[in-house]
Structure formats: structure tokens, C-alpha cells
Image 1 (cartoon, rainbow, N blue to C red):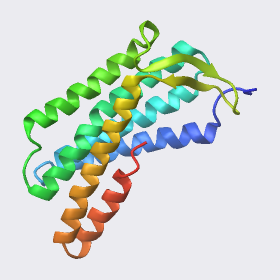
Image 2 (image 1 turned 180 degrees about the horizontal axis):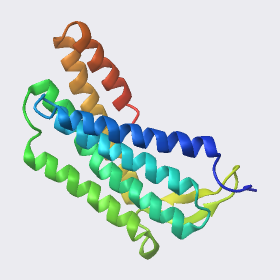
Image 3 (image 1 turned 45 degrees about the vertical axis):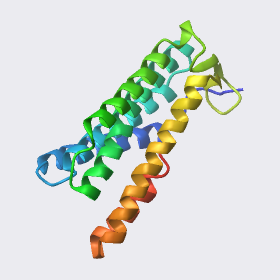
Image 4 (image 1 turned 30 degrees about the vertical axis):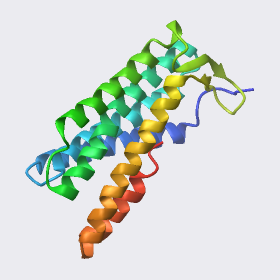
Amino acid sequence: MASGTAPPLLVIALVLAGSTSLFLAATAWARRRVPGARELAVLLVGSALYSLAYAFELLRSDLDGILAFVSLVYLALAIMIPAFLAFAWRITTGKGLPVPLLAALVAWGLLAFAAVLTVRSHSFFYLNPRVSTDGPYPVIGFGRGPLYLVNFAMIELVAIAGAVLLIIRALRSTGRQRLQSIVIALGGSFPI
């Protein structure tokens, strides 16, 4: 049985991660003339929202409260996924991500966000969402609906595509740029 809310250190770590992401986003935005800086800033804002929403999700023990913050996590993913690919594309090709692809990724992310936001009305995303008390603190438990599975596959494909672009950049680069590309490719390969 769950004993209460998430460990305070985990919540604090998530809040610190979110705050750090916001600081780094502001730093990247200040350097927005550098190729990839704008895309990185957007990615970091999404990362901040993800971390902060997850922290507050862990503080809730009621299904409606958990679902509200889970929906914000999916809004963050709607920002992060296109931004990661746009960033990798920009620093690899020197060009912006093609607008139709960017629009399709954003639209898909917003569809997933809307599906989570309205999950109590359908079973396309989560099947039987509930508060699971099997662990040390309450978390959302659910079965995976068809839209959840397609969304998960899409996120993984975009992460792989971004990683491949960054590996291509690493192979074309030397020194510090090569190492940066490898580190970002590895970090982007584990989005969830």
C-alpha cells in the first residue's frame, strides 16, 4: 500500500531540473543567432514543463489531480519532440526542419495532449486510468489504448531520427563539436 506522496528529494530534484532547464533556455535564447539555439531554447522550455509537471503529479494522490499534471506532461512532449528533431536537423543540415514535418509533429503532439486531457471520455489513450497504490507512493495506473501505443512509437521514431542526425553530424565534425553531437545523440536516445 502506498504510504503517501513521492519522496521529497525526488520532487526537489525534478523542480531543480525544471528550473535549470528554464535557465538554460534563457541562455540559449540569448544566443539565438547561433544555429540551433532557438530550437534548443524551445526544447529546454518543454523539458522544464515536463519536469515541473511530473514533480507536481507526484505530489497528488487523487486521479483527477494526477491526470491534470499528466496532461501537462503530454503538452511538454508536444513541445519537446518536434523541438528535438528541429534542433538535430538545424545543427546537422544548417536549415530549418521542413514546415510540413514540423507542423505534423506539433499537430500529433497536440492530439495526444487532447486525448490525455479528455481521457475520462474515451479509451483511445488510457484504458481504465486509476490511482495505483502498489508502490511506495500513489501513481497513475492504466492499460494502453491504441493511440497511446502509436504515440509511443512516434516518440521513439523521432528520437531515433534525431539521434541519427546527430551521429551524422558527429561523423562530419571534429573535436568538441563531435563530442557534443555524440553526447546529445545519446541523451536524446532515451526520451522517456
